[in-house]
Length: 101
Image (cartoon, rainbow, N blue to C red; front, side):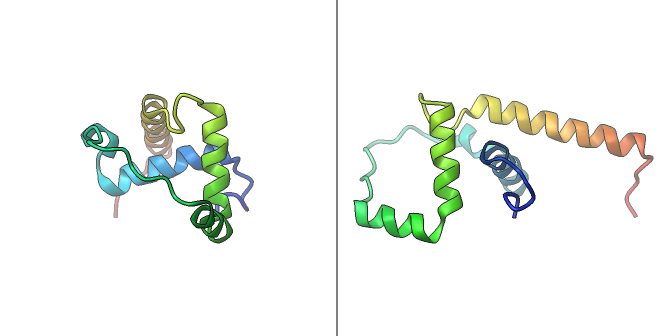
């Protein structure tokens, strides 16, 4: 778990997006269409159950919402973060003379 490794909720949030983009092979947000109807908000009981089951997910969402009041995710910054992360990793591997087996 990234939190146990000393990562901040902010870095976990960005890492989740970076890993998610790698898993999907593209940025899912680039293909999302506008919602045709507003989603129903969960009930307070549903929120409480989810928070009890997934306290770190709730903490990440709260931290992200506090950092970006216009919306919990800043897709442009998250894309830039992912690109920089990958390019830095590629450069480190190049400098180490990495090759596949």
